[in-house]
Image 1: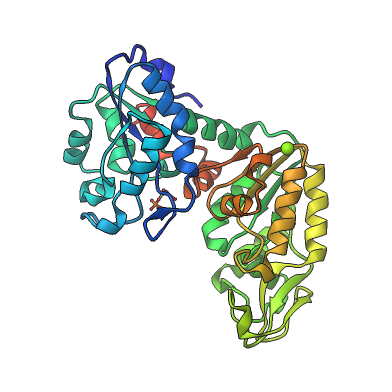
Image 2 (image 1 turned 120 degrees about the vertical axis):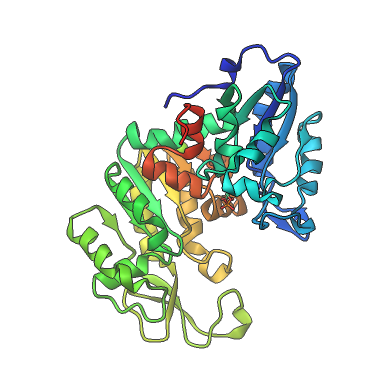
Length: 373
Ligand code: 3PG
Ligand code: MG
């Protein structure tokens, strides 16, 4: 896709550059638990510093509602950034101002005042038409940073130039969040594996009794139509389920854990793909020349329901083809399993990665191309 790159900004010596990053990192009691998104922006920040620019980074953090909130101060991010990219200034949380999410022209004017150029390296936020994402390119010479450009090359490339066989793996809780992506992927993949809680709506569409598993009843018809269309959707054949009385994340609460077929007794809740399905999925993954994985196969945070996600993660890591992990929970899973370095690309974007795969474009990219609403 065509949009301006860092090199297109020309001589940056002494220029004041605003860089929109996605430093929306997970925090626990004010401590960053995963700094991937900060590390991922360093190549862009280094390029600008090496070119002699005065660099100011900015980001949102969490979802404060347009007013300062000490719980969402960027202070921990600023401290980490000072270690990783000394010499970069950082603005306070953009979402402390209601103008950010509203794309308010007066907030954009504040952001661009006193700056000579703008760089968007916030892939994970580029699906938001917010002031700091779409506003500055209306006023300043603008370019995509290294991270944004790489994400678009990899994820956008899956739609147009993936080597086949191309195996997509989708999981996570809801079909409703991923219907657009499912349809887009069915146009390009050879096999689409569906696990995670979203598989239960598909299994119900095939007539299975899914017990107390998560089910989106209003989408059963849509799932049935997709299955009837002959789309290459691969569903689990066995499920790891938790019996009545059990609680997710709390083995001490009791409740039996058992492998069941795709139909389960009333009161049982499917929480992971079963071992037979995992093996079958691994065979498909091993043959793939391209793999895209987005969404865990089960509730991997609970060790009783982690095996499916772990087995699939290992299969993707071992695949000799080009392997891409969408952001969000599946990225968290590969980090938790220590497998991130064995993937070809782990995206820093969750919603942005899905939207790019679905639509082939993002508001932040359109803005860089000069297409202003
Ligand atoms: C994310 O973490 O998905 C991005 O930073 C976007 O955050 P948002 O969903 O709050 O807009
Ligand atoms: Mg590989």
